[in-house]
Image (cartoon, rainbow, N blue to C red):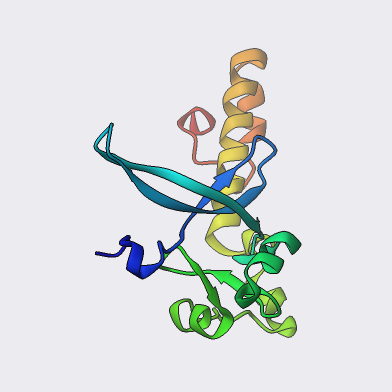
Length: 158
């Protein structure tokens, strides 16, 4: 059995998110409670802070108590335990990032103003202005607005 005294009671790990949005890694051991007849947490230790890139900043006290966790970069692995960087990169390969010269090609705002999207935006703007002007200024104003090339409004055609 995994939590038997011969195996040394291995540590389990979990994450805790604070009210400020910081995420911390905690280690705990489970122990059988014969009165309640269920397992409950026996010991709990603060491991360190979990950063945005899944790297764990190990606390000095935890690394002093457990020297096997000091020195290397530790990451929050797929198995919900601290793992070394090589195992983390094997589980989560790096995604390619566009080169700096390709950033203009990936810019959505630059492509928004061209092509069909730009034309659709112009149609909506013009149709809305024709309908508003017809309601408040009468049909003669709508005929003036119908000279716009983007107007497909039935009001402007009358």
